[in-house]
Amino acid sequence: MSETDRLPTLVEGLHAAASRFGTPLTVTDVTGLAAAAGELVAAFPDPWLRQYSVKANDVPAIVGRLGGLGLGANVVSRGEWSVARRAGIPNGRITLEGIGKTEADLAAVAQAAARRDPILWTAIESADEAAALRRLAARAVRRGAPRLDVLLRFNPAVEPETLAGLAVGAQTSKFGLADDELAEAIEAGGGPHGPLRWRGIHVHVGSQLGAVDAWRDGVRRALAIVGLLGGSLPNFDTLDVGGGFPVFDVGAPAPRPERFARELRLLLKALPADRRPDRLAVEPGRFLVARAGFLVTAVLHVRQRNGPMVVLDAGMTELIRPALYGARHGVVALTSGGRPWSPQEPVVSPPGSSGKLQLTAVEGPVCESTDSFGRHLLPPLLRGDLVAIRDAGAYGASLGSTYNGRPRPPQVLLEPDGSLSLARRRGGVRTIA
Ligand SMILES: Cc1ncc(COP(=O)(O)O)c(C=O)c1O
Image (cartoon, rainbow, N blue to C red; front, side, top):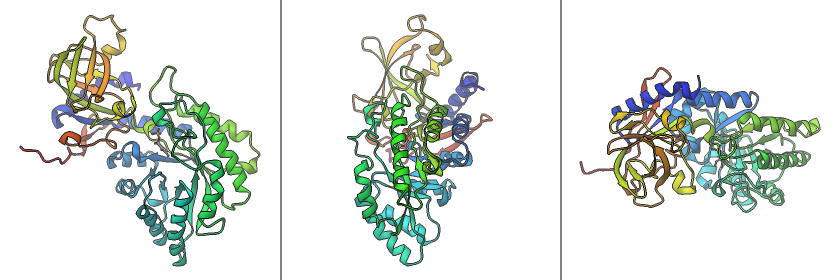
């Protein structure tokens, strides 16, 4: 069933969730989650390793649902690692990657190996990090632990077709190792036969990629390195192509995961069989969770400022993407003047064609002028009307804050049978009453 066909059920669920749990709150449509996971698995079927990037949404119930839909977990810290474990994902399906790994994070990797329960791999960001993990791994290996599997996080120096803030594969970005830094990192990590077992290359070009070109360039460069280093490193057999599959159409329709998969098949075909990696992995975040998430919020104020302006009870504390890097989210009314409103109306009415819809400035409640969702075509709204911010399932809850003394919103799952379950209760900021 398409999202449009499901709209009435979805809208009913959003209304029910708001009246039961209050606003603001985030509702995750489990059917939407499963549809996204199904599309990803179809594009990257077994034996591909599919690692959900937990940073996109770290609500354990959601990570757990994705675990049940064929996803492992890619984590950046012990905090996210613990979320993945609480969600029921075993260490053997967890990978660690991230620019900010601490000594304690790395020590936990070595300890897991010492307990004979290692994670799948750690992606190394720098020679410094390689040296630190080598020291910890050497101790574990001396006590009988297996060598620790590692990938090298490669900076492909491409120009990703995305917002500047999401272009992590650019040459000037702080992420990963440039091609002339790889040998130094291997050396710092103990060389080919030390306590670290070099398994391959990790590359993540950027997020919300508007086209496949930079991704293809980045992956082509990564494949060349796998082939090159595979000659001197005996187990160098893995390529992790990261995440970045888009969910919003920016100008042209966003390429689907299958489009990326097709590009990769062509790249692999062009290589001699002995230069192809044996293991392939993806680690998407937003593609799996963004569209399933709705931030349901109520109108607090209505003003006139060159047209209508509404201030909502949700903003950058619940969804910081617009304030952080200018991201745009769809906004739809669920009620107008206290009466139910079908969000289909703004979709089917071209701008200016309906007397009922007005370009309305939609603002958040936080004391920052960047706390704004921009202008949207909306019906007349009054204090108390309900509004849903769309595609709010990625980098919303996980990037949220309690700034201005605002409690974190509840996380609610809308199950396929229309029932609601509370995945996380409203947060614990102390209030007067
Ligand atoms: C290394 C890495 N992998 C995967 C992801 C997930 O990206 P996305 O949510 O765009 O799929 C990110 C996002 O920052 C990342 O840095």
